[in-house]
Amino acid sequence: MNISARNVFSGIITDITVGPVNSQVELTTAGGDKIIAVVTSASVAELELAPGKPANAYVKAPWVIVLAGHPGIRFSARNHLEGSVQQIVKGAVNSEVAIQLPGGTPVYAVITNEAALELALKPGAPVAVLFKASHVILGVPT
Image 1 (cartoon, one colour):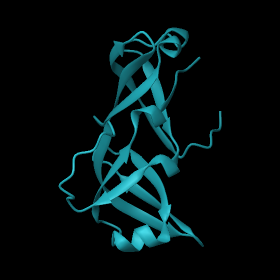
Image 2 (cartoon, rainbow, N blue to C red; image 1 turned 60 degrees about the horizontal axis):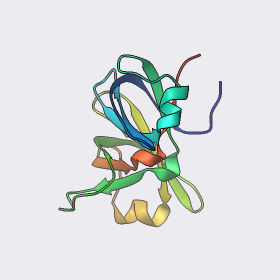
Image 3 (cartoon, helix red, strand yellow; image 1 turned 45 degrees about the horizontal axis):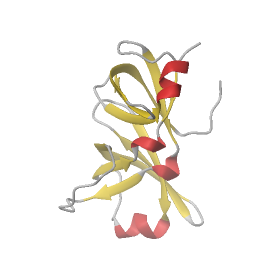
């Protein structure tokens, strides 16, 4: 299967908190990175999600926010992962930033060229990425 989402986190479901409308699902990658998704409880049932089952978390690159430095701010986004810039591909308006997480998983963000300059992004620079749990799409093998 081909998919347009640039970010694919493969792992095992390690926790689920079921609610009447939405549920929170934690997926842990082989490298130890934890991804939190908020999906409908109906999706949890339909996908037969359960701790110990393999799953993939998909996040589109424009949904990823890049942070440089230490802003001294706490965020409501559930997914906050540390890494380092691997590559920047500059386009006419936006740049694609490839970030490597310590566990080995790459994360891609699409940000404006202006933001890339303001953040002084360069290969090797430490950064963090943020994305909302509601922006995570889960999929399971069939």
